[in-house]
Amino acid sequence: MHQPIRGSFVALPTPFSAGRLDLEALEGLIDRLACFPVDGLLIAGTTGEVSTLNDYEHRSLIHAAVDFNRGRMSLMAGIGTNCTRTSVELARFAASSGVDSLMAVTPYYNRPGRRGILLHYGQIAEATSTPLVLYNVPGRTGLDLKPDLVAEIGRRHPSVVAIKDASGSTKRVAELVATTNLAVLCGDDQHLAESYAAGALGSVSVVANLAPMHVAGIMRHGTGGNDPISAKLLQHELDSLTEGLALDVNPVPIKTALAKMGLIGADVRAPLAPMLSADRARLFELMETSPALIDLEAVVTD
Image (cartoon, rainbow, N blue to C red; front, top):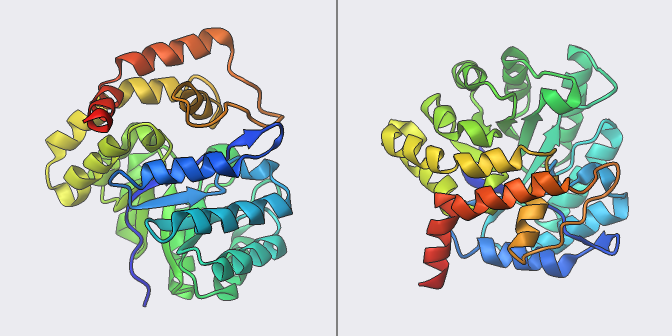
């Protein structure tokens, strides 16, 4: 029986330099986050520009993350593609590399029906014994994984232990909690506190790259209804950062913000493009006034 996946996970961007993986910068990101109350990391997800990585880069990124992490935080690897065979191969590689869990997005573009989705996730789940997290992000994939289907996947495959829901609906979070036996991880930074109030057990967060303590605090106060008022207050203090990260498509703003902090380069791969100068200026303005970043700087300099 697998333990539920829960807690504050950070969705890592993939650093690039001169068009190549910048693994030194990746190591720096991981070392920095290990100093904060971060439960886990997601490598090679949406924020990691996984769709622009070739197979060698994808595998190199996973291998390097395992090496750099050294077991300090739970490591989740994105292995989902719209090809079941490729996803299975990546799942086996990631599991053999020593990651703690796998995440597989719903297959995009192909538009599979219910039987196809069951087949897809079934083959991935049966390929390894490593815990598997489903990932529903209909705004990107064009496919919405409904709660009843999520429940059926979970019943059929014990290694499926959680779902990252990025539907943007706290009502959906509540439906998943009520309908399935899986841990629900919030994938929407603007609704962390509301998602915990609805029964989520964790999050996979982009803004946690900038404000790991605030995101962890929302989880601590929000889980199980411990202190929803404090959770909402911390969520409010994140508003300027989440506004800034919505100025362009993810991960363009988070890479721009981390570059401003001197942590990685802002390079993104085409078809993504750098932020417009006006949007970049607005992002930096929001960062400068963010209570979450000000509090973080105070901790770092103590």
